[in-house]
Amino acid sequence: PDGVVIHIKRNRQAIYDTEGRLVKTIGTIQDISDLVRSEQALRESDERFRFLVQHGNEMIAIIDQEGIYTFISNNISRVIGYEAEELMGKNAMSFIHPDDLPTMFAYLENIQFCVIINTGAFRFMGKDGECRWVECTVSNHLHNPIIGGLLVNTKDVTEKKKKEEALQISE
Image (cartoon, rainbow, N blue to C red):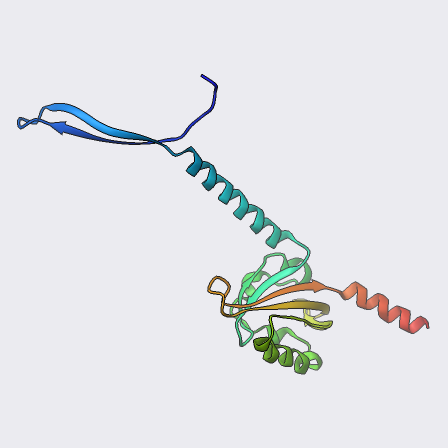
């Protein structure tokens, strides 16, 4: 009467007599509207989260304790040139400029004693062979069964570094 749509779950069982004739049916009807709305809200929340991760400005990755990529957001291709699938299973350290490796290895060693580490700017080799300057925030989630690794949020700071270098040269 009020135009509200409800979702129901119906269970029914037929009762037969000894000769196989239908005598009656018994059953229940349950209003599952709240469950349907909750499932829809969860789907929308998952889609929103996925969109933010895949299209946000920061690249998001998960690496294990040895530096192996176990998850990479698709937006990495916009900055680094690699598709996420090309980096999966590879060691993140193999894409870092050799001069920056000692510092990065120290961060990787120290993260086991910290919750969060902010790296300074370092060079990450793009697919085209050019280095991009990036900064990372690394969060230790090794003991979180959902993440099971180090959550790495990476920001491209190449343009910022170029401006800093140009300013130093002009002074």
